[in-house]
Image (cartoon, rainbow, N blue to C red; front, side, top):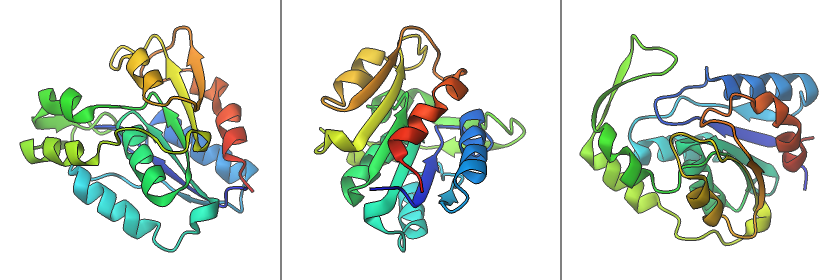
Length: 194
């Protein structure tokens, strides 16, 4: 099934201005102009972020929509793929963000707008805990690009969370997937955009 609607979800403290989001947006616009594209700025509250995303895609066709998620966005993308039954491409996806982001409770700066800050509260950790997907149900719907050199997340944990899924395991790399442009065609190929 080809993808007609594509959602991109950024990571914690990131934004639609991230390098990966901009590369995806440019590739979709130039190569697949008929695809409906959305890359919202996500609320610090996981519950509110997903409520807003569900509203955004409420009219999208489930059978032909897909989601791409980076880091925390990969966690959200997994939650959405399980809930909506759509395809998901994951870029160094967070697996246990409730555990990992507890250290960031308090005020945080946005990566791409350091003059702006956001408050990450204890309740947000609990919201993440309730969104955890214990195991994926349809591995064929998933494609993950995972870097062994990720300095933030453990590549083994990421890989083990997606048994049976298509995984591109990079021998080095970093959390930001600085070489994302080299993997873009493979991600687009998996998404099979119209």
